[in-house]
Length: 309
Image (cartoon, rainbow, N blue to C red; front, top):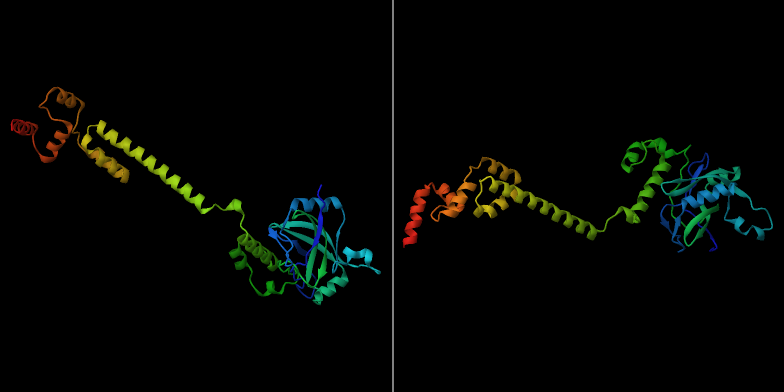
């Protein structure tokens, strides 16, 4: 089994939400792939593994000052805690923790003597599998959403956040911190889209071309069926089949209306008679007679004259 590595990062989380109290919930691990300003990474949160490890641990996780507890054995004096992580939850792919701050840490945060939080996590080949704690630091390594105090958010008191929530697709009752987290999540998704949600343009074009081919084939079959039906009904001469196919393909409804109103100009009985009588008219010749207003007798007489010549 590969040994897990322990990594700590200073997050760009502004803890100075108000002068009243530090935030109860803080963002600890960002959603999606992330790297530190120092080049470490990329990492990706395995939320299920982290939550399981926290539940199996059965104890609160410490937040210290400047990661002093990582080298506690080298310290001559006490290494005080700034707070304790009591619970974890996942919000839009990011890991958040509920913190119980110590009075001293609350004062330091309110006075802006500490502003940023740095998580300590364990990872296997870049996959974050456990949270070990966090530390209050001065120099952040990761760029995350600032956390505002839910109880004293001055911006929420001055600005109607409902239109902003609607524009971002967030819940209507979301506060400033929730909106900021939601906006950051949207930004990260835009910068690193999920391949499962996007189709390459070449694949999209191939599917569109295949769909167009299938639609054209279906239209051709329908046109052939309509033209064949008109010919069986004796309303269309074989010589006009190409014209009829073009008409039925371009305007199926128009061709259907024409076929319904067209007179019968061809019959099976006359076809048989034409085959036995050399001077009888063919289907095409009867159609010409109908179009030119000639009688069949006149047309036959004209044919005889041409044959004699």
